[in-house]
Amino acid sequence: MRQIKQRHWQNQRRWMRQKHLNRRTRALVLTAVLLVLLLAVYGAGILIPQEAVATDFIHARQSPSWQHPFGTDNLGRDILMRTLKGMSVSVTVGIAASCVSAVIGILIGTAAAAGSRLLDGVINWLIDLMMGIPHTVFIILISFALGRGLRGLLAGIAATHWTSLARLIRGEVLQLRSQQYIAVSRRMGKSHTWIMVHHMLPHLAPQFVVGLILMFPHAILHEASISFLGYGLSPEQPAVGIILAESMTYLSSGMWWMAVFPGMALVLTVWLIDRLGENLRWVIDPYSAQE
Image (cartoon, rainbow, N blue to C red; front, side, top):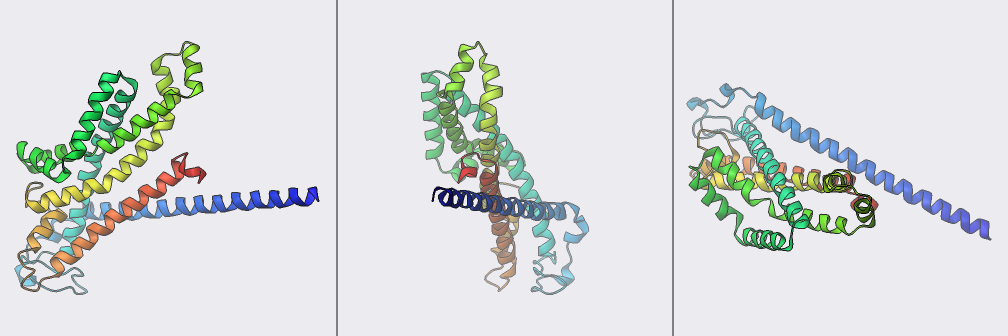
């Protein structure tokens, strides 16, 4: 009877390991597929020549066809080509702003947890203040103060998206400081730098990477929305927000494709990045990997 129970538990453990491996394998495959799709969109936007989005009044205001799958705008420019180039611009802005914002978040979160109570209180108050102000309004104010354009947009996005990651990093550092192996390292005479490098950074790296990727779609959406309102990128750049802003003038005349297809491409790209972040979190996060 005991041998039968042992075999049952062994089979059940083996089945659980296989299920966990299959789920992890699916997550890895899906992560690779999403990454390839995003790189393809980004690379296509960069490789498209400027002549492909040049003005052509002969083919102006054409509805979607095999020659122009997304149709053309009022100046005869191919909307598919402009959308791909615009997505590459949005992805570039999102990457730059997310990286800067993630670095700010991890530095401030670590300083709040490792510093004095006064510093922790000041940083928490600053985080609450930043989270209480709508991001769109704050980005518009910063972009307008810096003269709009790419510089103001990057500064605005980077200055408003670090709060959630900073709070997460602060909680992780506070939890790590209370662990026994940290106390043992201190009693052994290890410096704060050694403890940070060998004990804390390996635990903070997954949180940083996942937080960076999940911050990415928010940065892209804010770039598109601010450019749509006219406070972001200049109208000469083929950003998706610019394309959507131009399409508003012609929606009443029946040119629905100018807004629908670029908007769908933006939503699909953001959804792909969000799925990529969720799958990557499940793969590399030690807490999620045990689920």
